[in-house]
Length: 328
Image (cartoon, rainbow, N blue to C red; front, side, top):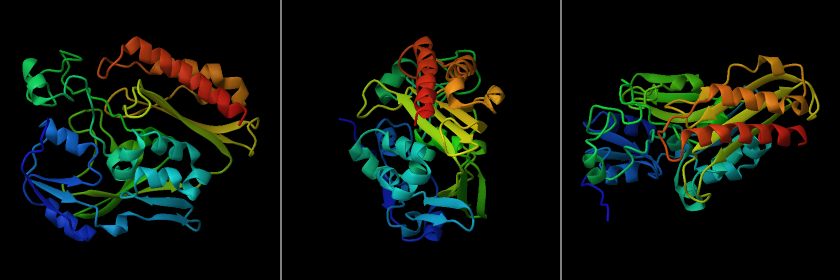
């Protein structure tokens, strides 16, 4: 049995108090704990203090602000509540689907939006027991100095396996941060680094407080993923797609697009070669979008299952998703 290490836990009632506690040595945030606690049991992190956010009510609101043209979702909202929210499902069904696809229902009742956005990167060589890691001498992300995926590489290539992040980036989401130096908001796509050791731009002492989503016009969007066990596993392939249309019909011309692939590296990949689909209809572009996804997305052996198989699935799932949107 893997046991938690000894540590202190405090549960502040306000965001300001939580930020102050984060200034203490070796302090870490915990919300739902669905990712952090297994990592603690594997000794992938060794904090002295956990700052729990479960009593910070100001992080749990879902607010539609039509005057500002955005939907704001607090970082403390559970994934189950995001998935069940009427306003999220109506305005951003692909994001609601992504939140509802995380792990299983028990974990979605505990896990939070902020936790899924800040999910630690994962790799088949590090997300193991301390004893297992010692047998291979560790790696860049744990106790060693080599990447077993890319042995001559200088950066950790552990992959971001968040379901919500690709969907949110495809929807032009912005992330709101608050810390000892004040608040700031930045594009979610700009929040991530391509280094598995420090894959976000979160500043010391900062807390993610909310996700802001601009209200949509006519569009079709989807989130698709593959994992071996549908009730628990992290995604091994994921693609989020968004197509803005001239009118609220599936056969209307495309006026803008954003397709984002996940589980490739420490940050999601926004596909760049899709300008040619603008002005055409969804029914005309399924094969082209799938071909671009296959060309631009080259998985590594950083998560289970062979990289060529995962790359093939990116093509298949992308094509099926566009075909489904074309008849929605």
